[in-house]
Image (tube, rainbow, N blue to C red; front, side, top):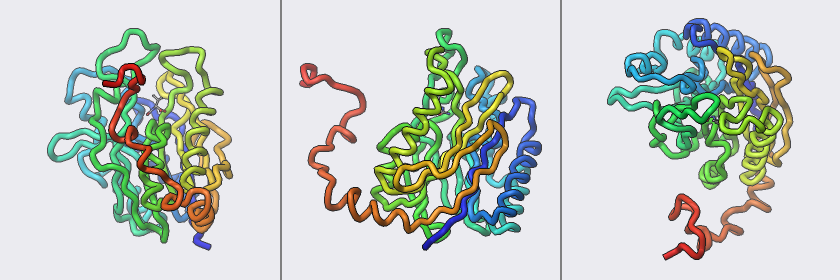
Length: 311
Ligand code: CDV
């Protein structure tokens, strides 16, 4: 048995006016709870340090930059790393990253139990748009403020397991899980900020949104025989409702633990990494069963080409 006690640290809404220090205090409280619960790993959401700022239209780059971290850890986040090290808990959280070269990414990092960063992932699938969209109920400007991640989908050996990360919209794309599955991933962690309604279809509300989120993560877990831990930022952010619904999914695709609230809440489950082995050596033994000679379109083509349009 290779058990990792995981704390899915869901966070309630973060208001625009809330300081990094105030948010880090909330994260420290969740870390303290995780220490009480004897967690080995705590998973925080996407853009955990701030409000989901891509919903706001900004033209002034100096203003945009105020949402980004130029160092990790920095002065506001150092207390998190100190506490994680003191408790002996590995952690992962998302933040907006501005590199020394002036590039902007939606990023998450993974630490070991000593608070050392062992992995970094930059969000590949950026949803939304880059110009103001008058037809939407609210904006989703990730394509304006970030560039697509340039690190692929690596996995790392941490806590005696193969771990990988993705971020929010990535969880809806099967290629993401399979990229990591092909590297033997046993645990995929991800954070998300998902509005409770579809900005382009008011008929798609909370129930449907939760269903799609869970459908994507349970399928990714099952089809790659890996644990998936999806952690939300939920609740209200300056009048904008975010879907909660954090879950821990086992390698058979079953939800074994879920959040009960839309606020700051730690969902704990002891996850045995050895449970991945059965699926990986039977129905999803990729080496025996995959037929790559038929998968060329997956990497050779982006959009749909109807058969009668193919050249
Ligand atoms: N932050 C996100 O990536 N949100 C998207 C919304 C816009 C659909 C998501 O996939 O949850």
